[in-house]
Length: 478
Figure 1 (cartoon, one colour):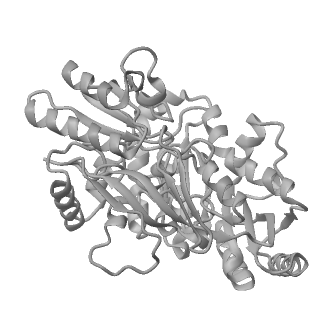
Figure 2 (cartoon, one colour):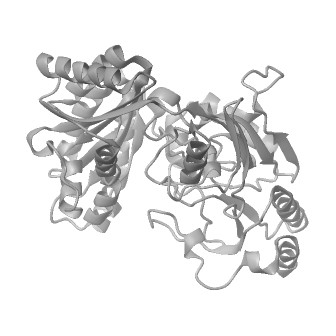
């Protein structure tokens, strides 16, 4: 394999083919569940180098079928389903796109921004704002995740309710194929009805069909008024009813609607005592909701407060706090986004990223809570997520006094079966926004229809017949 490594060094430069030292930033997944071994970490600077790296690896794979190499595309390595780190074979190239972070174009008249795949999401947000526009994709890892990774996993976040997943925010892509060819599809067109929609084939494919190197993204006008409220609610059903009331009163200005269970918020209060968590001790759930409006600030606030008063009067909410300014709103969002960090401080846990129809949400929570409590007495449920689009992070923590690692080893299969069977019974999905990666590939084979799995395999084999890109991720091949 030294011949291949020498060729890769010639393509990207010796300093950007890493084989020695601590490579854990690229080889260990964000949750620290796995630690792979890479043949090398390769860091190209532009699309031509990406294409040349793929060509070299594809050629080596053809010429050495007994010791094949493969490529694992990687952005910020913030994924949660072990989809962007190498396996333990030592024959995988981690192709890191972090050096490719240029802002290629801001087109104000067309409301688009073209960026390279390694650009950090927060940088995309800041560049859009500096140009007088809004890029609304927002998630907890936005300070380190990259736009290529967001597109590769079709990331969701807190504003899907209004703007959709990353897929809905993308108009065009530049992609390197498994053969090392470049598809130049960076169109800013909102209408292009000329055959198959290749862009949406690559979005959400987790690097298994091609390597996204750049994207043209939608921009929006900056809102004139942003309002944020923290609301205590007596039940999941009350939260669902509050969502309907907010949609009725606020219409398309409702941008975020997050539900958080009492235990999830108690972990934030326990592990981050500098954050003062409002209202959680007196209510089983709290809701964080946000409105972004083009109305005048006074008019928008009146409409927002009228909605909250109606909810309180009808009993859908027991108390509410409205942020007085953007700084207070930022603190409320920090509390919400600290839940995964607080849960990590509490110990290893079993994570789920599920979705069910909003109309079934209350029944799902009640049913699944009861099934888990019956199967594992004392189990603790860290239930929070994007209720506005039907997505919950329905996580499971060990009972008090039980070693977390032992709990995972002994109960993870049982917990996953209970949760996923319940999701299926309510017509939901076992992965709402995190993807499949390698962590859920066996579950996908059980819960996805055989017809869908067959179509997915056919697409993979047609586009990547060598199985060069991210093998054993998303879809299992014979």
